Image (tube, rainbow, N blue to C red; front, side, top):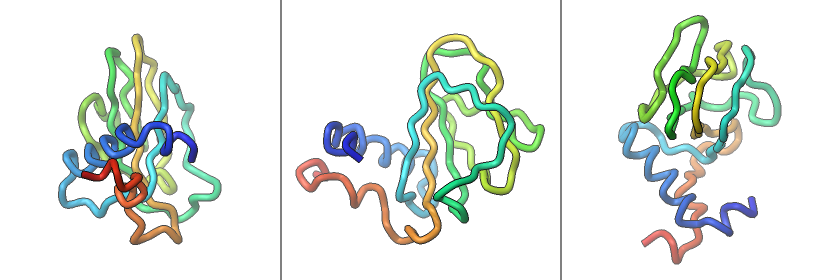
Length: 125
């Protein structure tokens, strides 16, 4: 994606955050960055079918905004929470303020490709 080339330091930092949150997790190949997104109950669909377990973390100055997975509320603000978005119904609780969520995952067919490997070489040091 063009954003990877425009913001290589941000890309690197996002994948390093995944490592800091879950050091024993297999590194993901992709990350979705959401700003002020309020998702209705759903299971993931689309091109990533068969993806790995997702890791999500909330960032920002917000209150509320918990992730609900199969009816269980989970506080994701500055915490890494894993869930299977392809099998588990999930959604976002209402929130106030500015809320970002980072969602790391590896689609089927991208196993073994790590996001940090995609950072331009001059940004990996």
